[in-house]
Length: 214
Length: 421
Image (cartoon, rainbow over all chains, first blue to last red; front, top):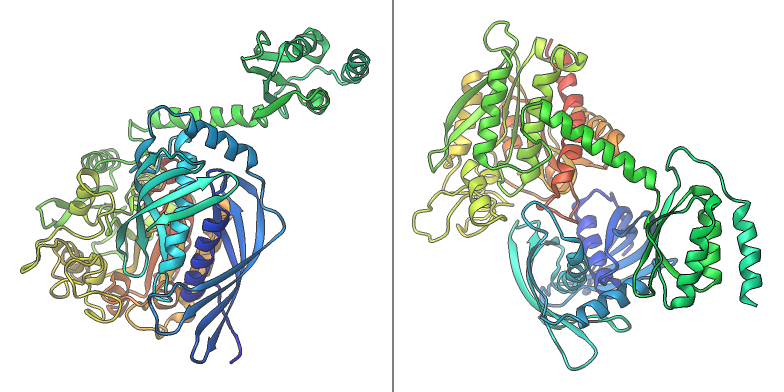
């Protein structure tokens, strides 16, 4: 059947956009890049018989570390019919280039590798919304990690945001990756629940973020 | 050879020197030297007095960073010089004047805070501090009165500020509440700023003055004090009341699913442990019943406005059903006008629509109850932000959020005033 136009302010469009942004954060996020949705420009929905519901989105994103410019993207989010245990299929195409984070990534990597004691922190941001500057990269990595969880666990009836990093512990490794064991608090907008989620994130400047245990 | 290159570049730099009075366009660079040779080049640069370079950390040894303020006209040529020599640098301050202006602004605001007593509207406060400020406002302004409309489950007073410039009793009135969901801290904080704004600007601000000359305003800044205290002492993410639920180990009812409007319908949970638990019956929560009784007894409310966070939305009924209210056209138009006013200040965009279309179907909500009880102008605001900080909005955004929200509220209240006379 044909795709029908949705008002961007309709909640179903916003939920699909959150999935696309989560997916992109996982793929392209890192200690030096925090992608946020500036605006949802256009949304269409297509009901595909025996398959599911597919959303076509036009998004305007910004990097919280580079708010003066925006990046346009298109995304497709397919929620599979009936199954609440299969992750939605997501495709995102970024138009143009994202700002390079090579230098910031290298600096962060070297700083963490050279720590004598493994990094431990909690409540990021704190109750008053503060994030100490040296923990901002850890916060942004948590965004990337939450992107994985949000992408994998979203349905048309949910909308997740990262509410807070409850706890993070660095685990030193013998290989090249950095490892962070996170306890994330995810806020689910429809049920209004705040759900703790434990996961292990690996990160490397060239290999990006990977969730290794969820 | 290197020296020739240096001389050529230096002569270009000589041509770029000027005398400046402000710091507009001045940049502060941090230069990281790799060896003695580079340190010497920086010392050479330092000796060129006409460039008026201001070294905050002077070049001395390769291991130490060199910080230098560069006047606007020389910025490009100094950078070109550094790049041509392969000397690494980063920008510490993009525009020094911006930093100085911000600092001046902060200091002025701080001085203003000192003048208006010692309550910092740009910070988050405890319940006790908030209640003290309510007392302060009531004692400072003759037309502001603190009244108690009931008690919470844990016996904390529910305090409302009444703004009334006289006239006969039961003037047409506007209701405004905040903090019904305790974790939405920007709402209680904004309500305090708004209270102070109304109190201090009556008599000088034409809009506020004409509003209060015709109508009364009742403001409940902390609609859920038990939950609010709990967010300070135990769980920052607590949303509900703190009432004990018979037969359950879980505590609390979602106070915005507890109103008598489609109670128990879709969009509310019947499970006590849920964050959207509607409670055993409508108005089971004393925090809700107290407001219902107060508004019914008053009998002349024309508007019911409630603050939540986050998502940047401006919504009107219905939530419990997905059909449009009878006054859809007027409410949609007024909502759009209010969102426009909000956006005019800092560019913050609020989406406008019915609760059901904009966020989700949700039964037992306060503005559905008020609308179905004859209060036409019923609106729910979801304040900043859209998820970056969510409930944990940094304190430095409280006043901007309050200011922009105020513009939206005023738009609605002015319309209500015009329609009520």
